[in-house]
Amino acid sequence: MSKKHKISLPEADLIKAIRTKERIGAEALYDMYSASLFGVISRVVQDEELGQDLLQETFVKIWNSIDSFDETKGRLFTWMVNIARNLAVDKLRSKDFRNNSKNQDLENSVNLIDDQRNTTLNPETLGVKEMVDKLKPESKAVLDLVYFKGYTHSEASEELGIPLGTVKTRVRLAINTLRKLFN
Image 1 (cartoon, one colour):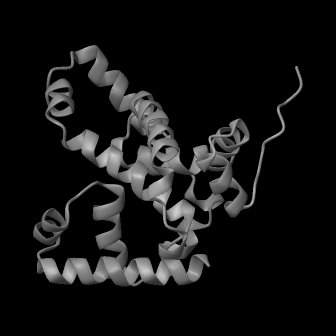
Image 2 (cartoon, rainbow, N blue to C red; image 1 turned 45 degrees about the vertical axis):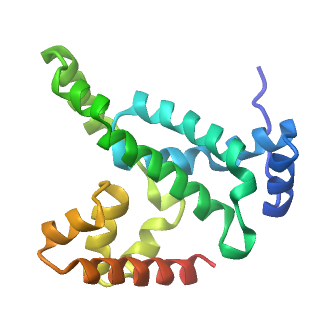
């Protein structure tokens, strides 16, 4: 069997195709962003099967919510990353998830630990690691907790022993710095 050619569209064309619910929009969305969004989700949930479910949920939400995307407020990728991250964090905070993770049998726990250790996320391919490495250490620490480990701003404040306002300021400054580096 021959490999399927990956579809790539300019951002404006992709947004238009999704808004008009064209098949090419769904295919390009998946081809262009599935790996990146799965990486974001995996950093939060650290479970491949759950991550795949959340990736599908992310694409459904993007598809159904595209009219709420405002090009004047930011890039499509940033908007989609926020959707993916928020869905993953919401899942971790859900009562159902907490109860299921407490009630797993021993065999599932061992498999889960093995899967987590073998889960590989390669942010180097996206250039994200290099961009985050350019941030100040205090900004990197806050971003790691808030964006990759799913902490709330309050939890990050408590974990780092710094005021809540400082956490929010560092997150905002780090995001602005990354935005400049990314563009």
